[in-house]
Image 1 (tube, chains in turn red, brown):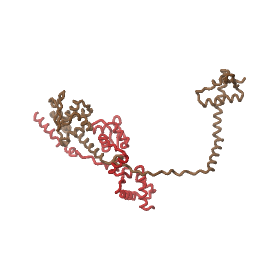
Image 2 (cartoon, one colour):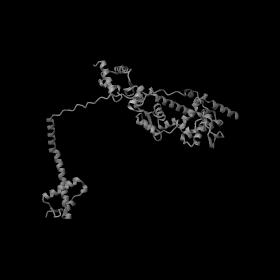
Image 3 (tube, one colour):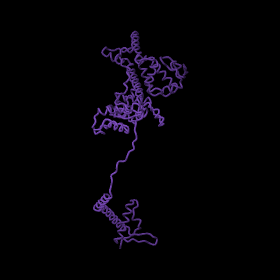
Amino acid sequence: MSTLNHIKKVIEACLLTASDVISANQLLEVFDNQIGNDTLELIIEEISQNYADTGIELVKVASGYRFRSKPEYQPYLNKLYNTKPARYSRATMETLAIIAYRQPVTRGEIENLRGVAINSNIIQLLFDRNWIEVVGHKQLPGKPELLATTRQFLDDMGIESLEELPPLPNIDEAFIHKEHDLIAEYDSQKELNNEQQ
Amino acid sequence: MNTVNLQMNNPIIINQQELFELPQDLYIPPEALQVFLEMFEGPLDLLLYLIRKQNLDIREISITKITDQYISYINAMQVLNIELASEYLLMAAMLLEIKSRILLPPPVRDDKNEDDANEDPRQELIRRLIKYEQIKLASENLNKIPQADRDYRWLEIMVEETPPELPQVSIDQLQKAWHTLLIRSLSTNNQHHMKKQELSVREHMSQILRQLQQNGKSNFFTLFKIELGTAHVVVNFIAILELGKEGMVIIMQDNAQNIFVDLAA
């Protein structure tokens, strides 16, 4: 049985040289399942701490673990690689937000929520990024596709599950429960009407 | 504030009043209206902007005021010949409908259906606005989460890949393999091959004889059907040689170098 220190070095080498997210199972298999999940998590935590004071960090995402550059250094990397990272338009981000928070959702529902026709380029863009996928069809005329976000989306957002997304802002709780006292204008208008009658 | 008083050719009728200039509230320069409209992701977004500009809670919006403002924007755009997406016009129609329903006296109804009939016509719109604003804010939050390639890079230390070790082969093994191959090809493969070709040549020989019987002495070249391809030409040529060798045809050449083939007498 290898010493913990040895295991730690092996895992570090695995994660640093991987060209994709590495799952916990893949790492356990490296050691022929001779170590347990608890040990693995402990070691990952230790490695993670070792990199705390560096320009890179180890993150846990939906599919497993991967090293990434710390976001605060991205501007410098952009200079090095001479890249200007593209930002998605508001329309794209709103569409993505609807799919992320209301999934599975049809295009029609997205259009309804945003109040505008959807530009198919936006959907295509998200498909190309491998952030959304068709997970089924709604039992409606035309069998519209049901869209949902992918594991790749979670990985790229650096999160483990949808629950880690920021919660939906709460705008209207009071409104839903107290529909009666929301209508000052309406009520006064009704009174006016009644008086006229 | 730089208020713009736009003189309009055709008055706009709002609240049964003719409007000869754009509302005071509309302080955005007309040439910027197009840009202004492009700021919005649709009619819901524009409505939200109008509501928020007044620091109003969505729940407390005055439908009359908002409708008037919204319609003034829409009218201004149309006066300036700015093409509007149909969604904006649909929203205008919906606002006017809600407004008119509020102005009408409540319909006479029996108490049982009161809940339905009593529904504030604004409610559906307010619900949509709230849902939209929620998603709008959510998308802003989503955009703040670091994204791969935009806000960080995945790390990958390049490791030079050593080619997998190749199996060693001795000359002995190679020789054995060759022998096996040779024996196998002599015993099976080759025979098949020969047989096939023989058949084909034989077939062509018969074909040539039939042709000579029909046409008599023929020019060498007329015996070939070039369009059938190289294989045909080769096999046909072999067939003619074979026929000649077996004495079934005579191959001759005249003074002008033309080659003729004829049946053996």
